[in-house]
Image (cartoon, rainbow, N blue to C red; front, side, top):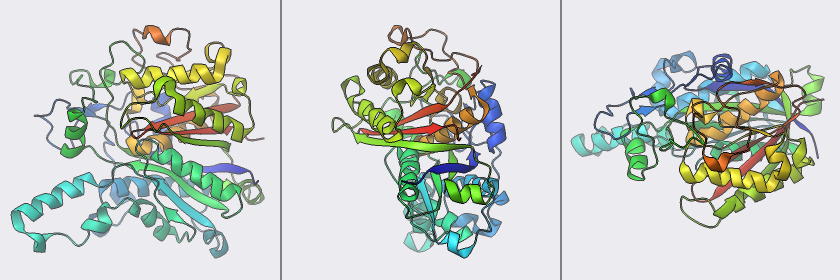
Length: 415
């Protein structure tokens, strides 16, 4: 099987509109959560979210073409442009482009455009609807637009698996390259669902934090005072490349992806299986695929959404998989404490974060962890402040979603 490395990174997040600003904020423990501005949320129980403030899609898309896609597509294009430019592959040869795939996970697609066109249909009739409604909302137009922009002619599709969507996309891209069917891929996730339907729907499930008076303290994984997750939007994209090709062209290599595990709980619509049984199998599968022992993992970027059941169930699963190492050497943190939950884009962003941890030997913190849940006792949750670490060599990232879908990805320092 061929080795697969990361040669480009691009992000647009609530913590920053590029990779450098996002990573800087995370290393400083700064939250990107604030009052909702994308729609009037004054009558909603939740009035806070992680928005990509000051994001300028015109930097990446011609103004006249903005109407062709919902905001999630704009975010996907923005992060992908940054990643492609970072990798230096925008002008790749035709032969390389034919073996370059585009895999971008999306959880819920274009809610804002759906809402807007539903109003047009109700108030003005079907003849006033935009012809861009369908291509502007369907999920696969996120990778589709990126593929068309650069002429990447390998497979282009969207993985949709709730909050595991972006992680699935990276895992699938890894497999395509690993087995020799592709040489390169754009892979990650994108999401933008901070709308009346999105926030109202999650409020109806009683899933969101209502700490409107303290937005930056609302996402608090593992803390006894957590009251739900915080919705966010954004995109996190990696350029994956076959190692020998990358080295031959002198590419900068951030790290290597070495393991991918995916499972289903087959248990419940929204709740994880007892003791995170499905998550355990995903982590074990990823470690087995990576050919590393559990005690070789130095840091685990947890799914850690800031919900009562989810947070603790994941810790139980980690305890079962990592054994004694879970409480004596393994650092675990939830960067959602700062970014909020990017839903389908979460796995893409958190894969980016995992790779940056390896590059800089820095582990970002779990902020707002003022009163840890007693069931989190003994875990090193990296509270409040980032940590500089010597010899950080292997990192694992978890992404789980409604419907009992679980993904674990393993990355290592490139040598």
